[in-house]
Image (cartoon, rainbow, N blue to C red):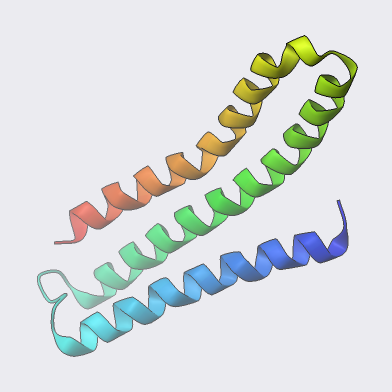
Length: 110
């Protein structure tokens, strides 16, 4: 994997965390997130942002490796297309798991 693709993935993850924290600070300033102690809410939003960002980054890395191997396997044996797509789908599932955890965390904040 090239350095530029790793750097791009890290920048996207950091940008997602920055956006989540900025949205939280804006909501806190508007008074819409006042049901829980602000410091607890801040940590909850940080945890949700980190779980989503890191799981998306990990899914991208996993799909890069699994996708390359799947293309190589399909080029050798075209009948393995179904099995290869299953493995790529499993790698993509990592991002969905992180999103589910984020939704669970944010559901507890209210």
